[in-house]
Amino acid sequence: MSLRNKLGGMVHYDTELGPIAPYFVRRYGVHPGALILAGTGDNPATLLGCGGHAVLSLGSSYTVNGRMREILPSASGEYNVFGYTPGTAMALTVFTNGAKVHEAFLDKYLPADSGKNDTNARWDGYIAAAGEAVLQEDERLMLPYLREESVPLRPAGIVRDGFDERDAGVNIRSLHISQALSLKLHSDHLSRTQTLCVVGGASRNRFLRQMIADAFDADTYSIRHAGFAAALGCAISGARALLDTTYEEAALRFAQIDQASSVRHAPENQQTILKLLRRYDKMEKGAARRPPL
Image (cartoon, rainbow, N blue to C red):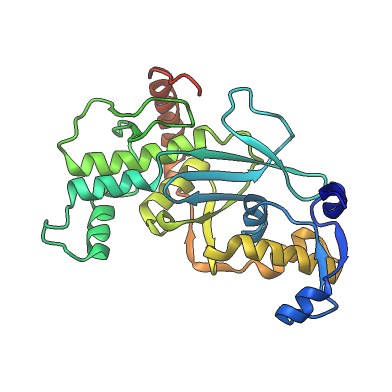
């Protein structure tokens, strides 16, 4: 039998394929009545597991993943379009310079021999060095490209607007603000949402979360057991099929928000953010482009 016949034809995500094979019942003790659904990728599953609207993953690199207003490919190649739930699509943008830049700044400005040997204490000091969350129009901005950047295509090299690397507090604050502005600037293809699910290691940085909430003019939250968001999304798909309900209802029922993680956007920063976005956009466009691979 050919591989094509073994695999079967292409079907939509979550199509019911039939009961589980007896092998898995014997080998792993799975219930013989288990229903098999066609699978999906980890990014669509994570989006569903986080509630189904928009997800910012703040890991070594940052990703913005969410439902699209309309299905349009990226003319600049900055995001990829994927099928999501039947009849809808999602877009995914990946920023190379994410939490790794903060780690580099932590080691530079609060090294382990600075008197704070405990890593958590160093991070607390690092975040405190960013200052107050009230924004000013003359905030110092940077292009934080520790490595070659993918969105937008730019060569490696941190570009600072009117300051140098010596002042720890200015650099740490600028990095937080500039990353939030970049995330927003390259996410306008997403559907408008009043809430953002934020996951990943850097999501525990409350100052960064506040800057993201203000840049997107949306409240942010995390879900319980965020490290298992993709698996939860698959479980929500299964619940939708078994309970004969909608994706929205299943996600609302099973994606549990960590209420303590909520960060609300600050209305007093709204007008300032718009001006900072224009400044950052101009600064970014003035930087030399990196030729695509």
